[in-house]
Length: 600
Image 1 (cartoon, rainbow, N blue to C red):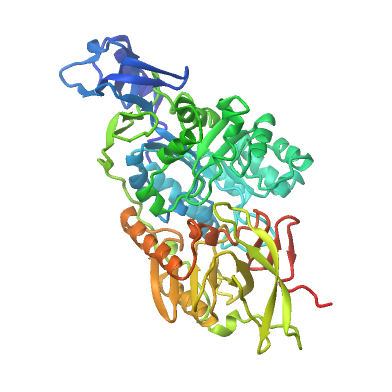
Image 2: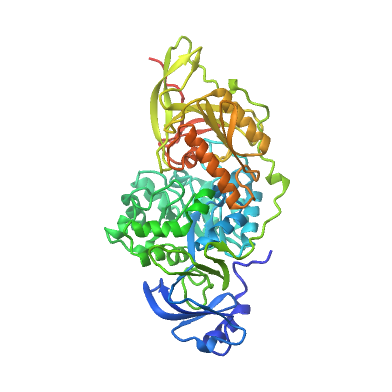
């Protein structure tokens, strides 16, 4: 496959130098703009940009000598010219879209570079799935860099994935043209304990001279954190407060502050820069997880930058955090992240540096979006049947599969309950006294049932537990084959028969999200590729996702973007309490715990 991310420099350099020296005309000149220089943190009026071979040849006040008969000239009309935005850590699958459709959705928002970790599909399809994501990423008109997933399973011994990633897989992937590093190292206890498999993956990445991504989801900033950093991870996006951000940069990591569809971790951490005055070059903005509705209706990295500015960050610093800081972190400062000679001509024109309307977007010297409309094609991979037939329950489920028997003679029981926290990835480990009816434990008072349904190997296995915080009422159930990171099927409901209906429906359509109430399907988002993504346009997926949100609200859930909380209930590397195919997991101790407390 042609490597669009890294073209042969000897083929490009002679003409780029000739245009920069004034010996040849440019392909494109953007003139009369305000140059947002992220190297010097300045906004310099009256500058022009000369582009050749998709790269910047020169930035100067007068580039009339670079304009020839065939040169395309764009008048910036005094607008700001800033680098294309970079998302430093994200999962394309969370958008419910393929790489092509994700690119189509975010290009009009000014995102021209993405650093993606396809560990969602890795859990379902293994290295083959990663290669499919990588290959479609290389086909796009913008820069989609792939990080090789590191942890499938994320917590060995506590979950069973569809496929596993091995150190040998990592070694192989490091030679692929679009791989820029190792995806987030979620098994932080394994790294701190010097687990040989984790260290082998890190070593393979370091030998290749690439970046090791971090994921340290623990409040312990003592010796365990020091051990984790010593093991090699170079960044972290799991911080939720100022102390987290400060600890990471003091220990030589980059602090990645995220604003996703449901993760609001910028405002609580950016005070490390705005109030404490720490060096902003070690802070990076990212999204982590954005679903299609957010992308279509609210934006992508432009949304994150605007949010950082609204939190008191200087606009030029916020732009640095979404451009040059990211490029430098991944060793790509000479390629992307700034408007300077030799870099790719990824440029945004905007009339306001604070409100950041994205008026024109150029990628590799080509106009790719204008006034919110995409102007280029985003080619699709031909996804094989093996990627479209991944939901295997082994049998039709009935309400009996979701029954939780009580101890003999019990009228009530004390249960361990997963507590959902609005706008955050962590959950709470709660306890609740629940009633027993006809020998079965029932939810009540805001506590409803959760089940993990095995869907990779057709075992017919169902793990049952309880969750609180969604606020559901009536006879309903919501099921999803997006269940980070093992991506079995998560079913949450107040009625066991509705839970069975929802689970069987997703097996019928090959994966996705559905909501049932009183036997009626209120919403369905089909995700036929690995049970995670749709290759339909983002606008269509977003419309179905909005019906899902509306249906959740109609069933009593008023949480912001509660679907994201739903999708993370099986993520056994983020505290405090999660569910897996092996049982209920206390992530504070990384041990399985019983659903029901022993009776005294």
